[in-house]
Image 1 (cartoon, rainbow, N blue to C red):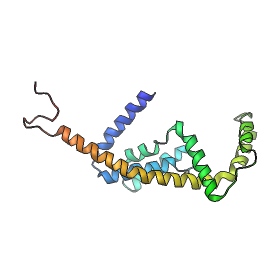
Image 2: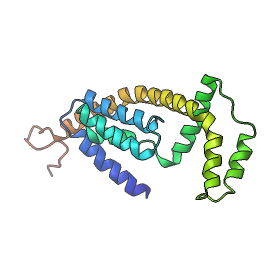
Image 3: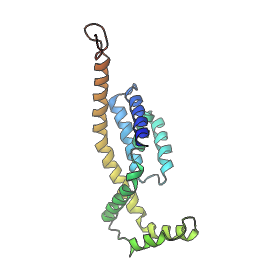
Image 4: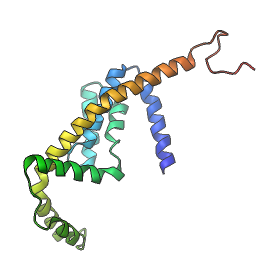
Length: 181
């Protein structure tokens, strides 16, 4: 699975680096995707993709870069990310966790997942954390996007320079890096 993920990301990066957009626009598209992927603004994961593609079309940004940014919030970090940013949002807003929150969460998962009681109790338990979730994840994703932009721009510029050097002809008219033996 990890090898397939690496191969897919490698193909996307290759296509990302060979578009005719400037490094600035490519990095901005990626940073926008990171913002949307890590924020809690669209509350359901599928909406991140729809919103990202809509904004990419509206702003005429690189769609691959935006999607790479959106999907940089990987399944094995998403729960921790939202837990930490929601806690940060709760701290900022002065929101306290409901009494015996952890025990209530544990009890919740003893109920059938498809039962109405599970979902009713989940909504009742998490409702006080809605604004901390939105505020924390939005601020956290904005910080990530601001950090991501210069790193992505430097990466794109470096890779493009390297690719240009690799394909530039040497003194014999051959692409650089070819053996003449």
